[in-house]
Length: 172
Image (tube, rainbow, N blue to C red):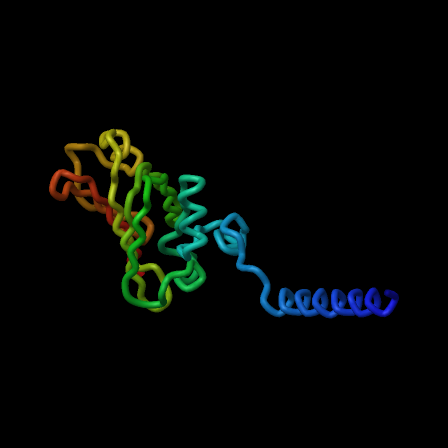
């Protein structure tokens, strides 16, 4: 009986050590709510699967364009080319520009364009019902759609097939 108990305890010790070693070598994935997976050090949203899940959960995102915006790869985006993010439900987007900020609520899609590891522009698809308010938040009026430039950024608003779309482009 004593030998069986010793063998059983020894086996449990080996199995426990093996599991502990495997967990330490292969840590669990970062949870969507963890800051490392969802936000950069300067508060920008990440567009990795965990980052997009976090955006969807809390309903808002932050993106810097132009000036000291950081790298595209730090945001989970490719260094060059395009990337599309489609949200399953509309989110509020905070675009931090050099010297100002634009908030566009009810964003359903972002089309990113990157060059030299920077977000060079983003196209924003609006899905809300209050176009007038959203246009005013972005510095436009329903009768004044078009393009304006400020602090090294070009901001455009247009109606495309009855839908409101915005473009923000860094001019550097």
